[in-house]
Amino acid sequence: MARLIKHSYARLEIDQDLGLGMMLWLTHFFPEEAWAEVQSTRALANLDRMWIDPPGYFCRGPGLPHIKFAFTNYGVSLGLQAVGAHPERVARLNSFFAEYQSGDHYDTDAITHVMACVSHFPGEFIADGS
Image (cartoon, rainbow, N blue to C red):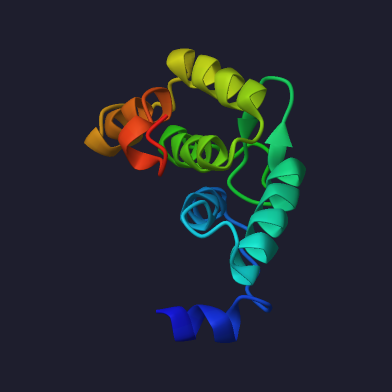
C-alpha cells in the first residue's frame, strides 16, 4: 500500500465528495507524510469548489450542484473533522440533512443512518478519539 501511494499520490485527483472525505480521513493518520500533505490540501481545495451555500451541503462533484447524497456528505464530514477543518460546514450539512428527504431508497438505507451517526459522533474513527 505504501508503495502504491508513493508512486501515485502526486497525480491522483479526486473529484467526488465521498472520495475526498475518505482521503481526508486517511491523511489524518499520517499528517507528516508528503503524500498526506499533498492530498489533504488538494481535497480541501476541491471541497471548497463543491460547497453549495446556501443551503449548506457538498455536491456530488464539480459541475453537479444539485446532486447530493446524505451519506456521502456525512463521509465528507468525517474527513473534515479528522483534519480539523470547517466545523461550521460540518454543522451546516448535519442541519441540512436532518431535514432533507431525497425520496429514494437512501432515505431508508442503513448506510445513510450509520454515516449520520459517524458524522455526529466521530470519536472512535478519529486518531485522537475526539
